[in-house]
Length: 232
Ligand SMILES: C[S@@+](CC[C@H](N)C(=O)[O-])C[C@H]1O[C@@H](n2cnc3c(N)ncnc32)[C@H](O)[C@@H]1O
Image (tube, rainbow, N blue to C red):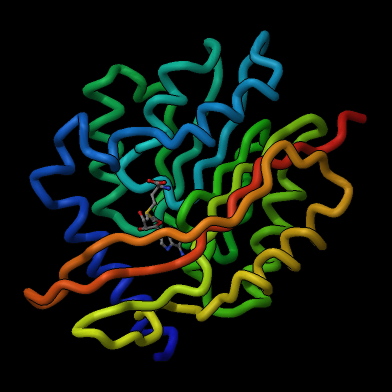
């Protein structure tokens, strides 16, 4: 499996996800923020405006609730590779009256420069594994670190050891990069060596999906971290 095939599958999967009827259901998982993200707010100073970068923001599962919750003057920069995702996020932001808080950006996280100012919170939730190499993964984590202000927080949820099970057979997932749990954990530990760790765990994750009318189980490990840059 090469990068191009993996990327094509990432695009196919998410285009389908964002155009499915459930995408408009407020109770669907893709509209329910993950507790690890909302819980990370407790570590931030929210007596002043907060700047957030949400990488792989999708249709706004975290961008929208954050935009609704954060103090006046805050900004959430929502970055996604897919125009479809960003359009859907923009519509939702307008519907929920937070369009002035959200800065939608269509861009690849690989090479993204965090050019809207220092971050108080950076989210990399179920997106960081979509890069072309282990070096690109490390470089992205380092740019997230360097973009974060003193006292700022980074939330990571990284899918590793991804594989598919179908018809009793196990095969590697159709993904851009075959990132192992061991590699991801080692690189995160190196890049964020002197940061405070508020959460650290790795847990198995499985979900049933469909492709070309056939179902398969996508299995992975979720590497999760909540990390805080030391205050100066
Ligand atoms: C599984 S969804 C997660 C969305 C959201 N972060 C969440 O937790 O619900 C992954 C998102 O990352 C986006 N994505 C994948 N590769 C990307 C890349 N290289 N740069 C930016 N976004 C990317 C996809 O388009 C998709 O919207």
